[in-house]
Image 1 (tube, helix red, strand yellow):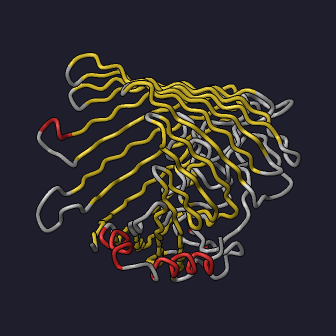
Image 2: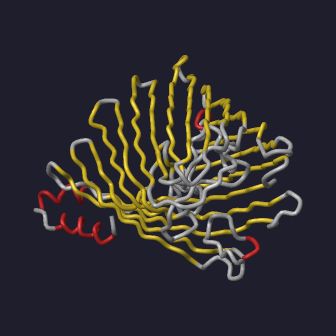
Image 3: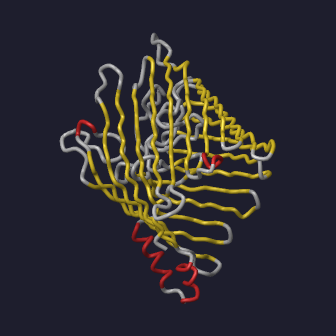
Amino acid sequence: MSRAAIFATLGSTLVLSPQAFAEFLSDSKASVEFRNFYFNRDFRQDNAPQSKQDEWAQGFLLRYESGYTEGTIGVGVDALGLLGVKLDSSPDRAGSGLLPRDREKVHGAPDSYSELGLTAKLRASKSVLKVGTLQPKLPAVLANDSRLLPQTFEGAHLNSNEFAGLTLDGGRLRQVSQRDSSNREDMTVTTGNARGIVASNTSDQFDFAGLNYKWTPQLSTGYSYAKLDGLYSQHIANLVHVLPITTGQSLKTDLRYARSDDDGHSNVDNRALGAMLTYTFSGHSLGAGYQSMSGDTGFAYIGGTDAFLVNFVQIGDFANRDEKSWQARYDYDFAALGLPGLTFMTRYLTGDNIELGAGRPEGREWERDTDIGYVVQSGPLKNVGLKWRNATVRTSHFGNDLDENRLILSYVLPLW
């Protein structure tokens, strides 16, 4: 839907009676998030084309969500205003994903960039149709929000909860605005690394459909279908089960399987299997994961998005051709020690058996991540959050060796 059509939809709500318009206003909410982000990535391999990526920026994210007008079909509108401001960058240190990048490395990142997104929404019973700017979080497509500003899409998304325990989703995406850009563009399939995917064009049509059924409070299963027109089609099945053991203890099982095939203008051919087990007790969480790739290529997903994989982490996705990978993870919530808001996470992943082509040795890689975060719980600084993210990656016979640090200071201010 064009922005003009969205405004027309909004305008139609304004001529409704005051009574019908009451819920539209009374249920609305707005907030602004301040996100200060410092990013440093040092490339450690020999002959790296760039020694480091090092940038600092300030983001402002204004979010507005209206309620719905009264009646059988409720009408509403959402708005998203994004502004990124450069604090420090240079052409030889660009490319962190915080700021738009000058591909010629002459002028460097712009001083600022911005985006306005509008979304019309219709609600009937327990179903909601949204048309306009979207940030889908579904197995088929996971919009990325790991930098200064989030990735957004233009399209339509229908979500339905008409039947108890059953959630249905479906829709079509037309274009994407990447996290370091304010431009709308056609979508691509993720390539690079050693995944072996070759795609000859882009696409302005991504169709998705999915269902998730909650059999019990502890067990849910899901199925998703996705098709990036002309590039790939995909089937995804997943299962999540939480087994209560005793008070404060549980075992979570997360199983995922995906099959991806080409759709005319790529060579996509992949089967991805993943499993993650997490044991939680007294503020501690211990996790172990396994992921396996098979087929002629690695895993396929829209360029710039997150991958629905158990071993998709801070930097790597461990989704290269024929790769087998393991993960060990530990989390601790310091609320168990009387320090709510303070959290810690560390994990280690290793992958091998990566097919690099005839005559080349097997590829290997490993990644180590550590996150420490704190959110102020009370006082004048309540809800101010600070997070430090550290990562180290090393590869054999392909890819980048790098050390990375991210420092993120954030605050969400409710406006009403």
